[in-house]
Image (tube, rainbow, N blue to C red; front, side, top):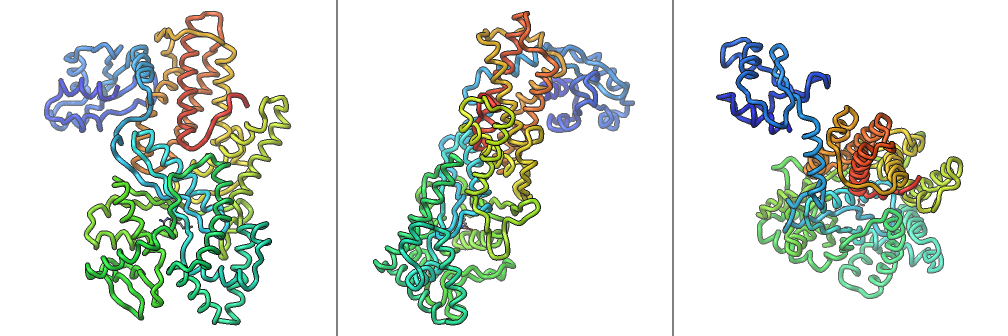
Length: 561
Ligand code: ARG
């Protein structure tokens, strides 16, 4: 509508670009002042006339088009009143004519790689990893909605000197049974023991290095223990993914690049980028005000960055991505900046398509989720706790609810997803159960509850037909709801461009709030079928967009709550 007003104005105003006219247009503070206001002050300077006079002259010249019901001079402003039923019709038609409302095909033929979750084998899946998992999954859904092909990559931390340490620890203090029964937590505890013991007996470190070297050279025993640790860890990770309903296309973790790094190191040497420092091979980044990027240690073993560089080259070759996105905590910012620079120095112009998407810390209200010694809270425990808490709320408030277990899962998990995504990702997230699970706040449960309310309205109405009387949609609450509905595509696009799922989460709350106001102000299930059917259609549209928006956050919606 704004564009239409701009088009209209541009026919009558010389010397101003459309973009400029658009930037001048304002939204009046009160509905009775119309839908758009065009202040004539800027024109006054150019035309050397008083703004009210310009407004008056314009109003006399402009031929009122169909989509407007009135053009009114208000002081130095020209105010436009949209023909509301026309406007409503346009929005609804837009919705009805689209099979992917809110989406587009801008990404068709293009591939995006998203590297997210990527937990470390033999370490617990902690709440920080929960955040990359949830943000990455949402970014995947958003891009998919825009028609991109997305490769979901779990770059498992399954390689590195720590596995040498683990093998030593296992051989000294571990037992098959304990690892089999206690999984990751057993591996973590023998790993801690290794560090304690290595302080007293430093030669343990040499032993560990030797085992990792064996791994790098394909030693069978070393690799079979390593693989066993990896399988055990993956099994635990999969439990979390399963609870979240998240899948990956690739689990090619750091180990996958073991046989691909030599060629990359050769290439770096050929391109004259390697400096040897203290036996280690590095890429000096002084010129770019960054510490050097470490490529090999002095014993020749590879590092985190070496594997990331190899992975990027491999992905470019394999997927020909138009963007490769990495979702990790902010503390890895420098790491990514360093090796992105190395890719640039190697002469690959696609370095600019590598995007680091950082996020802030997670903490627990009244407690701490992570300590200086690592993250201690398991993601799985948080998810289970959330489901249990919702179960007891249901038990208390609505014990007759059918299929309580499924609903508790949808809402319990949804609450965590929503809370993780509601604030800008760079901000820290606080786990405050009271807030997360509040059905009246800006929360997952609130939006899901609104969805269930829409579902219940439609159940009560039963059959209705799709004829809509647009003149019945011109009241304030209906209009406000329609404006939210109209905004969806722009919201999805904005979220994709900014890699910011919070934009969708906030929109979901806005849409839910407008719906609840509509529900309150406009009785739906009335005698008059004209009114009833018209409103039922709007309820159905809102319901489907709520579901779609929450789907972009990775959430599902119960029909009854
Ligand atoms: N495994 C790393 C960690 O847990 C995250 C890996 C992120 N992805 C990457 N390609 N570096 O911190």
